[in-house]
Image 1 (cartoon, helix red, strand yellow):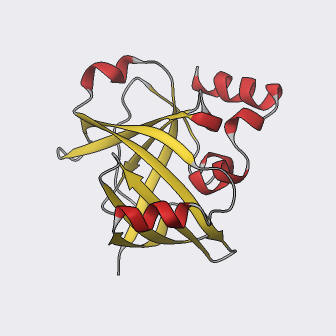
Image 2 (cartoon, rainbow, N blue to C red):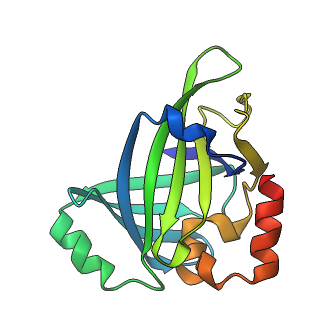
Length: 173
């Protein structure tokens, strides 16, 4: 069984951009989101696709089962989605951690209905893994459901009130 152990953060500055190793364009849609599981279809760079089941609620450690599927089938499944398609560019930024190994940050810059939102994620080998935070990392939002893609498909960043987006910007500073 595969588990995803991930922490999420807002971004404090654009300093990370100079360290990007790779980037890819991602479109994803949610077919269902129940109290115990979300079902997602994702197309990466219009070249590969996956169907993913993730346990809920959003927390540091979640069951994640992912299966490659043909891109044409993924396009057809996207038409069955609930909510908006989540569109983003994922930037991979290598960064050393406290234990001397290397981890990669994944910085998602959203566009479409989530234009303006930027979230950094880091996958960890275990829940207790110490992480050295780069200077460009802002407030931690792990476990805050509004920052998870499944929620963004139902309540896009563009629909957030001025007060909540101002609060998000303030936490990044």
